[in-house]
Image 1 (cartoon, rainbow, N blue to C red):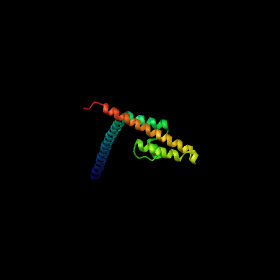
Image 2: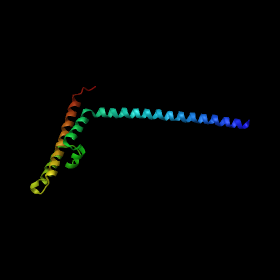
Image 3: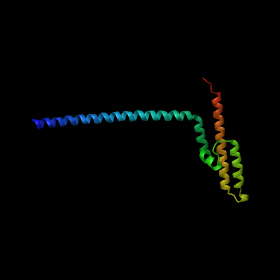
Image 4: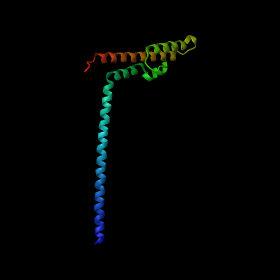
Length: 137
């Protein structure tokens, strides 16, 4: 009889242990699903906040073949300043002129980089105008 009780207790303990494991997995699964939903919502909100300008910037990168970062590296500009862009463009364009032993390929990269940065400046100016036109609450 005592051996039967020990066996019964082992069965009951195993049953409770299995229930605890199943409940733990369910709790962790629900928490993970909730965190995932929150992350998707935050990502969607960030994408909406970038709005149309983000799409325009991506389209400009696609058309020019250069990302904004690449264009900034080519012209060696850290911030989008029209004066700095023009100054660096003129210098690099002259230095890479074929008549002074430069490379037409590099010169064309400099031109494309300037075009890409000018497009980004145009997009930012348009964004600023749209923000000013928005009714303030």
